[in-house]
Length: 138
Figure 1 (cartoon, rainbow, N blue to C red):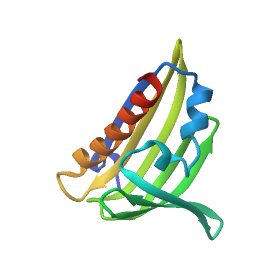
Figure 2: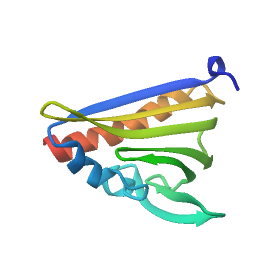
Figure 3: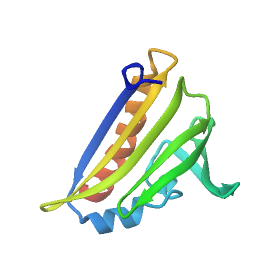
């Protein structure tokens, strides 16, 4: 799939806490249910040596994602299975230091299979980042 046929969604939030403090709370592949209100639970496990997570969403739907890469303040993952109207989905969550705090960036590239895909992904990211802003900047 060429990038010309893929959509890209990018969202971020600035927080008034250090990169290390924020990443300690959100940086584990299984930590997302603790801060994203759209996720009820997460289970992290291995399949053939690769780390996966099984997400139970607040609407009852299930997602399976595979961790692709990790770094000091980022991780990249792909959607393996779920009811979203997209294919070939790859996303990165990262935290970057800035003066007076940090930025949390969440981005994805994917092939939409329905015109609503962009709004669904963007809305999910925005909901999670709003929750971080409330939790850390009140």
